[in-house]
Length: 286
Ligand SMILES: NC(=O)c1ccc[n+]([C@@H]2O[C@H](COP(=O)([O-])OP(=O)(O)OC[C@H]3O[C@@H](n4cnc5c(N)ncnc54)[C@H](OP(=O)(O)O)[C@@H]3O)[C@@H](O)[C@H]2O)c1
Image 1 (cartoon, protein in one colour):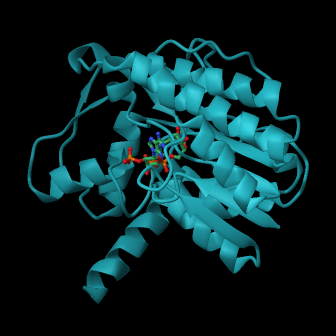
Image 2: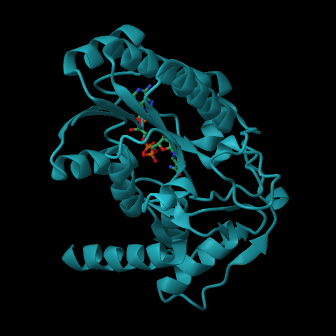
């Protein structure tokens, strides 16, 4: 299959590029320095030139707080940029896989969200990604929409790295207890995503490590796996941690559909343990 990846320098895109190539696909990818997804003519020309069977659209404005501070910019990149990619795919006859988020939900449900539940975003990032979902649904008939959440990886900025770095630097840690979602290891997400897009079974999916945690419990588990079991973390509530964005309180995702197809990610606790083991191996190599 000929695959084209947007956001190819990002956490997911960079690994996906390698994974798809390793699986024998012909892969090309660009990021903002080569192609800005908000430029429709450039996007359409690139997709027409590459003629991909499938576009995997990872490019996005992913900082939730920056989206809250600059909502119009979030819409320009995440909604309109996605519309551009979707129209270009429609014109070329390419299928499209769009990466979306737990933040399309409002967090009021109290049990893990199913793929069929109705989104109701409560912040600018979630809104922009939800508009992107609608663009994909309306404009590109053969599509996958893949929602994931709380990604952690060995590169880039993410919650797990922030907690670990602060603890290793001896800084005090206060972490919220009333924000719950599904932590997901990029190294687990990427092969699952690759497997899914090889099926041709288009639709909306939730690909996350199994289970869910509050930010506090996630942080505690990270430090415990690192052997920092005595390192204190002060539990706080979201109101004590003011930030530009208002996150959903409970946005755990249930991987119901892909699991029926045999595509299932391990529990998040095992993924964190694997992450820590891999970090140690990387440190030993340095
Ligand atoms: N990270 C998470 O926890 C999380 C959770 C749920 C869903 N997702 C979704 O998963 C996808 C991949 O996330 P990720 O963690 O891999 O994000 P990432 O590391 O931030 O990668 C996104 C890439 O897109 C690029 N980009 C931004 N604006 C662009 C534009 N106008 N044109 C072209 N490229 C542009 C970014 O460049 P710059 O870095 O220079 O801006 C970055 O390299 C995103 O769609 C995101 O919404 C992420």
